[in-house]
Amino acid sequence: MVCSHPNASLVNSRMLIAPTFSTSRSQIGGIAVTELAEKFGTPLYVYDQQIIDQRIADLKDFDVVRYAQKACGNLAVLDRMRRQGVVVDAVSAGEIRRAIAAGYSTDPSKHEIVYTADIFDRETLELVVKHSLPVNCGSPDMISQLGERRPGADVTLRINPGFGHGHSQKTNTGGQQSKHGIWHTQIDECLRRADQTGVTVTGLHMHIGSGTDLEHLSEVCDAMERTAKEVGRTIKTISAGGGLPVPYKDGETYVDLAKYYELWNATRNRLSEDFGHHVALEIEPGRFLSAESGFLIAEVRSVKQVGENHFVLVDAGFNDLARPVMYGSYHPISVAAKTGDAADREQADVIVGGPLCESGDIFTQREGGYVDSRRLPAARAGDFIVIENAGAYGFVMASNYNSKTRAAEVLIESGEAKLIRQRETFEDLVRGEVIPD
Image (cartoon, rainbow, N blue to C red; front, side, top):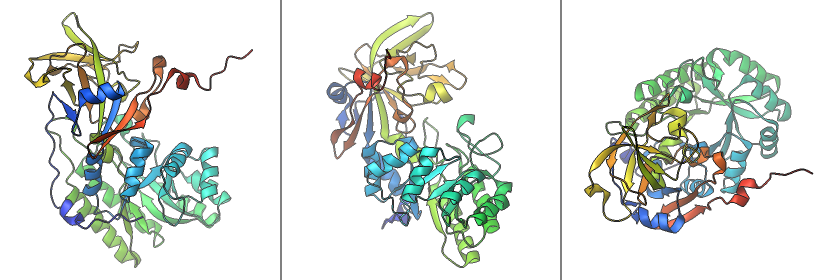
C-alpha cells in the first residue's frame, strides 16, 4: 500500500522542532489531567491522536510507511493508522490476528501485513501459510521452512549488516551481539535455499537499533545498496527499517528527516536504474509514530523522606511502564496538581517510585539500576504524576506482576476522550487459572 500526501515534500522540507519539556502539566490533548483521572481512574494510559497524525504526515515522502505495531498495538490505534494508509509489521501470531482485527487486509498483493521475525513458531507458520502473508525472513532456516509449505513464495530478507546502534545495548539490533537478521555474509546461502523451493527474494530490510542517529542510520544505506546488488534484479522493495529517535530530554533532537529521506531516495534511485525497474522505498517506524502521543497518569499516594531522599510514591509501577527498570530509560515527568497550578509551587529534588515490592520500582533511574532524583514541583498526596513520551513500549510491555491489573487506555481525538481498553479486573487476572482436584 502506498502512502501519499499532497504536501509531502513541504512536510519534510523543514526540520522538526524539538520540544521543551515542562515539569508541570494541566491537560493532555485539551482535556484536564484531573478530569481524565476522575473519569477513567489511575493508572491510566492516554494517547493524543493529533500527535500520531502529525508523525505520520512527517514521513509521507516514503512510498510506504509500515508501523511496527509492537510499539503500541491497541486496536483503536491500529485502526486510526490504517485509515491514513499506514500498513503494519507483525512479529507474532498474535500481532497478525491483531492487525486483522483492526481491519487490515490479508490479500497478499496489498502487503498490508508483513510478518517479520527470526523464526517461525508453529502457530505463526500456519497463519502465514493460511493467509499467504508476505514474510520478512530474519534467519536462513525460515526461507526453507516457508518454501516447503508454500513453494514459489516471494520473501524479503532482514539483513544484519554487521553493525548496530541504539539508546541501549538491549535495543541494539545489529552486529555480532544481536540475534536479529541474516548475517551479511550469508546472502549466497539464502539464495541457494530460495532456489531449492522456487522462493524469490523480492525485498531487503535493515534495522540496526532503536534511537539511533543520522550518522548510523545513513550507514545502512551503503550496506543496503551493496546487498541489493548482490541479490540482483528480483529486488522490488527496500526498507529503511525503524529506529528513528524522538527527544526524551531537553536538548535532544529529531533526525533531519529531509536529509534522511534524501539519502535513502538516492540509494533507491541508483538501484532502480541498475535493475531497470522501480524499487519501492519503505520505512518501518514504531517509536517515532507513537511515543510522544502517550502519557501515563498516576496518582500520588504518599510523599515521604527516607534519609536524604525525598520519595514521591504513585499508584503506577514497572508493571505499567517497564522501560526505566529494564533499560534505565529517561522519561519526561510532570506534576498535575489536584487543585491549583503545580507551576506555582516550589521545586524540589525527588525520586518517583511505584507500589511494587521491589527496590527497582523507580521511574527516575538510569541504566544499571542507579537511582536518580528529578527536580519537580512539590507534589502532595492526591496530585498526579504524568510520565510523558510513554506511547511506545509502554502498555504493550505491561504485566500483572504483584497481581496488579493492567491500566485502562484512552484515546483523545477531536477533543473527546474515548475509552479504547477497559481496566482489567480481578476476574481478568485469574481467568484461565485452574485449581485441580
